[in-house]
Image (cartoon, rainbow, N blue to C red):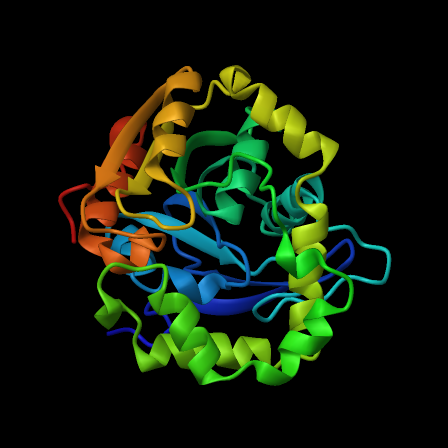
Length: 288
């Protein structure tokens, strides 16, 4: 297995962007660029089982760390973790790397950011693959409660992340100690839980609500992938989303929870690489 903090064929890069330092994993090779956006509380390391497949298929994957997560800096006081600001952070990475157009892959919260990018910058995103994206405003947002992050922080250890990760997958063996160690390392940042609180509070902005109200306007060819037993975001939301996107395909993943790219990487990689290769002859779906 590839260590979560050292994906093969990838180099860590720190990019100066408006608001701070953006860290990303970049293969730096020739090929169709693919931007990958992780989910809530996660980092670019989550794509450990996706990046090699994209590289082998002839793509140039770029996996970013969202602000305040992974190895990216936390923006200055006053920054709001709205879907539009997270999207702008990702666009800044593409600008810094001088990438005018690409495809995008996003998971969970990162899937919402990816949908927003396709909705607002259709000229820059050729195709979009969305893994269980957030497409609604939840009734309860516990981490947004004032001061809660200060209570949770001292409790953050391997046991907490092991338990949390196992609760969202079908096969508990998916949650390796390497994965737990990566989450624990990231959570040692003194601002980690404050960042999560900010994301919980800010993500569902008026712009997010407008996005959810008009998925029909997203003309980017789309692939929606969903675990059939996802306990966080039920598959019915995926089926509803694909009915509203004008040009979309849907892949339901049996015996898979909320981390499809880690739980069933072979199925996800086959679907994503094949989808991206539809209009990019340099992408080889036959490579593994």
